[in-house]
Length: 64
Image 1 (cartoon, rainbow, N blue to C red):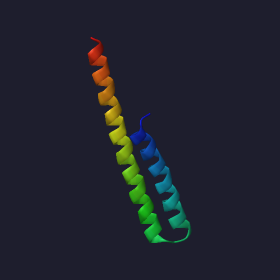
Image 2 (cartoon, one colour; image 1 turned 45 degrees about the vertical axis):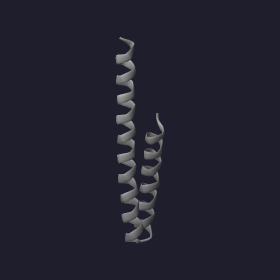
Image 3 (cartoon, rainbow, N blue to C red; image 1 turned 180 degrees about the horizontal axis):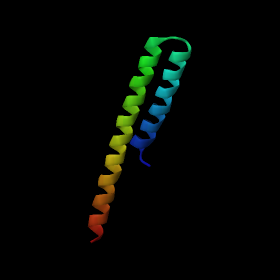
């Protein structure tokens, strides 16, 4: 797991926590912020996945 994947997973957890807290406290702004954080986390994690896949492909091709 690379740094991007870790940060993305953390942002998703943080976003879900904010979203749920916003729902519980009827704070629409906090809920929206949580959804935004969760979305950014998914993007970061996807970027990390892509980075990992490219790295693997490069390393596999260099062994041939």
